[in-house]
Length: 322
Image (cartoon, rainbow, N blue to C red):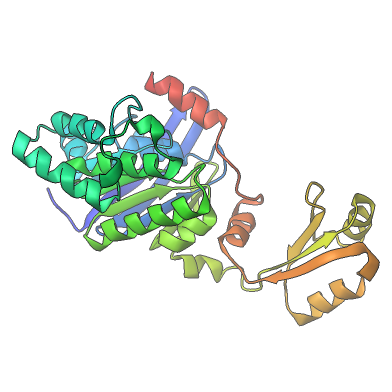
């Protein structure tokens, strides 16, 4: 059954033993859009993605992907989607072309069709000149492009990207962003998880924030940022003693000892003036006033900043998949 909704999730629950990771999540992803799922470690975002891609079974809830039920029509779901995980699925001892040929075989493409599709993907992902080289000689950005090309070999209309740019340099990240935009322009739907909030800001039409297994907010990036209209002020001090002194008289601020930075909400000119009046020029290395971004939204909604992967959720999930 086909619908205009690529992913529909209602009342999704999932537990690992006594640990309830997802507690009734509802979300919808329209066709031809990018939906970014954000959340701190252990929030449940990776579990939610793996359930939608049929890698895990939900405990409760109705989940339809590409119009199919993930429990009763899992084969149809798998034929409709592509998945690019955080860790590369390429075989580094094979060439780029051989990796794509392997995926073409798994997708049961005939020889003529496979040759045509592989050639088009090598050109589209700017890998044609390196097609005959072993993937172990590729840069990090080239490997991720090859990984995504392998995901696209079966022409899926819905792809799951689990932190696709982790570990890439800024140029490679921007290149991958452009590839994602091109796919979406062709009508592909993308469900993205990322630890880079600027990535969600750049790519997503809608953003969902998971915290403690609950979807605590959802909307366009602009809608979410409007919840924190003032942005923030960052003051970098020259030494830890001065940082501690300022933090003691500004309890509403957050001190980062490692970077010697004090952060607080910018609530307007009056609050900014009060802060500046307390600053000693000799103690300050720099002052930055920033407009609200998704980092501010994330902090306001979850009570802590975004952080890298590596959580009990990931460990539980790996054990469940085994």
